[in-house]
Amino acid sequence: MAGTATKRDGKSARIELRLTPELKRELEAAARLQGTSTSGFIVSSARRAAQTLVRKEVIRLNRADSIAVAEGLLNPPGMNAAMRRALAFYRNG
Image (cartoon, rainbow, N blue to C red; front, side):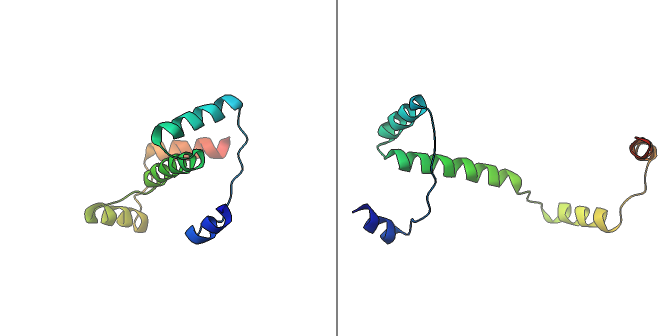
């Protein structure tokens, strides 16, 4: 009873995929090699990829770097010549 297992393990959200027959066969073969279902293989692979991307979005700073960033935001340095030229270029289109 798939419905019972779904309720018991808390999985209720669904995603529908459309893919080529070739990709479907490839995913099924990979799942068999891992000894899991095609659905389980897709979910675990997608989760690993998502976690990797999310980790890349988080920047961790040590205390000194955190202070330097805060200082730069609170007391930004004045514009140098290159910044003035870039601003003039932007304003003049």
